[in-house]
Amino acid sequence: MSEEKTYRVLFCIGVNQNFMDAPESEMGEVWQAFSAMLKGIDKLPNLKVLGVMDDDRIQVGPSYGAPWTCYIMADVGDLDTIIAACDFFRATPVGDGTYKLWKYCKVEARIGRELTIPE
Image (tube, rainbow, N blue to C red):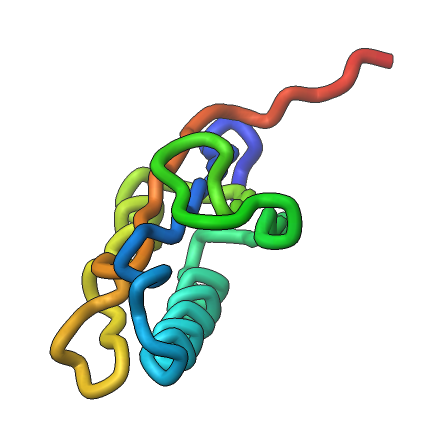
């Protein structure tokens, strides 16, 4: 990815009340779907994951906005790939597929550019 065409993207992920209200067995299915979503994003062409951070130890309960539950920082080459990453929340089935991942969590992509630290 060339530097001038790369977006620095922070995918902000929030767990919602549906997850908090789910029985433990359903929570396990959501975690499996969440893992599949993370793997899918990591495999997208033109996207390089720089890091993932989880706030789950110091934040309890659903995330309605900042602070979010977890974050993925990535360098992404184009807007279509950013949209494709967000689409994993719409398309990843949970359990038998009756519901998709977006029932249990949400994503917001913050798009910017790399800020280099002056020497």
